[in-house]
Length: 477
Ligand code: PFF
Image (cartoon, rainbow, N blue to C red; front, side, top):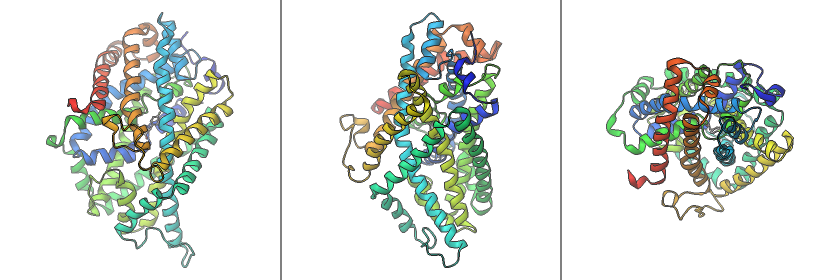
């Protein structure tokens, strides 16, 4: 039977809109606002953006449908392993295909551990810029302003101050993880859906407002030229590889979120168009984030290729020089916090659903178990910036020779686990799963179905296979 299954009947999305909000919330996160502009800036702008959009359209979007579809077809299993194994069994194949679901669950668990640490940095800046707003609003308030009147060197130094304080980093990390856990413990309808339906609209309003602000106060035309004029000489094979990997991370592919969220979708919802909307919204937000950030970067004369420090170290300085800058700074970091929270919720939900079914736990204990373990690994990531800054966990592997704990986990999940799970599920869905079952569940028909299945069966395995190969052996390029 094709349908929503027992789990979705008990605690699923109340509507298609609710699912859309939650799935877009999962997709839109630090990847869009922090990683995408950074990568575009480092890889010459327009050409990278173009390749990224092509990757999303031809590989990302079809894979979003694949994962959501496997989740809903999974016969009442909320977890990624059970869902994939069930579809395999009903297709007359081995349940061992569920192993790719397990890779996704493990990837989600590890991404959650460091994602929460980086989201803690965002919280740090929410508090700092909140203090600045207070200091502007309340004349003579006791708080000393964080950014107001500070030089670039001083603002840059704030990141260093945070990094050299393990206690502060761990406190922020635990705060963020606790909020994530609280929402997931409230369940799909009562927690995840409610959070997404409040936070995502707030996110969009802030995004549009800051973009409009940047358009007037910043160098909008320069940003548009930078983002949309392809300069193909800047486009290296490594950048193409990077674009495809970024598409995976940004769409939350390969990390159990979409399969698990898909399992809560009612049978009446047509998945094809829904998946297209998720991918389009995620890409739209990435582009808008570029249009939000780069006008400010150019107006302040900052370097677009400044890398990961761009949003934390450069923008707070740029905001100060602008009218209403303190408030814009607070709005900006709040926006990133909302985006990170709806993503971390999805990162916790996938492994939680798995723990519920694998260890026969209720939601509460399962979510606590996963969150506490991920929290512990996150502590190691945070310590990797101070006490354990010499630790190189993957020193034996040339690609990760010089990467600290956090970046090693980011690297292994992003370069190895996500593509591997994606590759396995593309091959499974394109070649091994029952064609009629897949067709009925996809909601696609005729030429659209043939096109989608062709992309999943042929293009995705080849392209994703290439990410794996070149991600792990860049020397081949
Ligand atoms: N897509 C999120 C982002 O762009 O920040 C990150 C993410 C969330 C990855 C959920 C994987 C996942 F399952």
